[in-house]
Length: 547
Image (cartoon, rainbow, N blue to C red):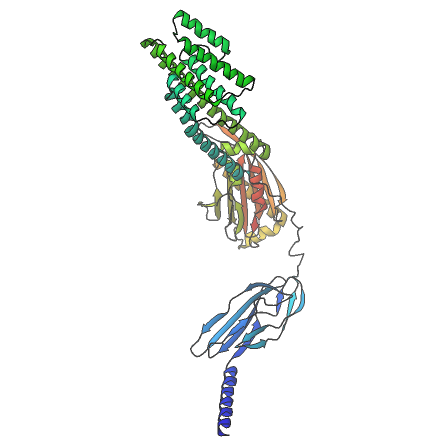
């Protein structure tokens, strides 16, 4: 009985300790705002405070519909002097106006399920005052042209590398082999004996092999007689060849034994029967005929008259001439193959990308390099203007403190960009106020525009431009910013001798109360790509703040 009471007391003590530990854990949840605009981020926090480390498990796929989860942050643990703070954060967003309940969230704390209350959030629509903020049409889809420069460049590089490797392989394998064969030409006698020795290992497995055997055998003999004995044997019939050898024997030029000629006659006769009558001789006859052919070659070599030094020299010169001809032929074929490959690659690229993009890329046209370069997005001036340009505009120091200038390139370059910020003078005295009251706002604005245009013309004249033709019109940029476009043509020196080229220029004037912005673009009149570059710069121009 005492033991049972003791066990019950211990259980009660343990239970009281667990309850106490639960009471020391506090859970707090909240959002940064219950009223937000469409598309505005909402941060949802769950904070758990405990005097000890606890086991917390959140769902791997939290449920916040109709809100979308921008980011699910990991659990953050902060150790204070006397307790621990656990923070879980979610970033949410919604793109439709109305009032929505944020679903109650669930998580496990030391194995116990915790359910948090839902929260009502008001998502407000964006109010637009069309009087203060004008509305613009939705921008149409802009067709992005292919970047021909990189594609053509890599195609040509791959083709050239392929041709280079092919050329190396060709010259290393074929040319070296040809040269070695040409330089190390075996004498006809040694080559004939070598080829006859190789026929000893010829295997006869079918009827067709007999024909091949005798064709090789008679071919070796005929070629030797042609090269060494100077007898036209290759184009002669069997009877013609025998007749020529008998005539040479009669004249004492090639004194072959009668038996040797008879053996040759038998070899040629057997060969004709095998080749034309499909006769199959005995194997012993094949070996005898090969031995007779070898005896004929040896005997012919012995009875040949020795060559004089002049004849030997002529033979050597003839060999060298043959080698040079072969080398020239190899070089000619290699160059021809290279030219054909380049021409084929060029016409293939032209058929795909067009003539001018290919030729300008190969010749290194500077403006096509700018067009296809990796453009830079930067902000300039105060308040900032965002520009997308082929390169970063550099700050230009001016003598007038009221003018801030940034530029890319110069007048000698094929493309020039200049961005000017001009502060307007403040009108504080009464005289200026009285004079401004006498003039209409339209006249004042027109005067300011004319001053800015004059500033542009002065800039051109200062740099040596002449024959300036200009006109202006009111335009809007692609993003809807109104501007005065001042454009035309001018002459500018292109070399030290004073020769002038014709250039196009476009100056976009953005006139505001406290500041005027002038964006000037200058390029050669006949440039094929400059207008495309200008349009890309203007279409991506953006004023970061209202002036």
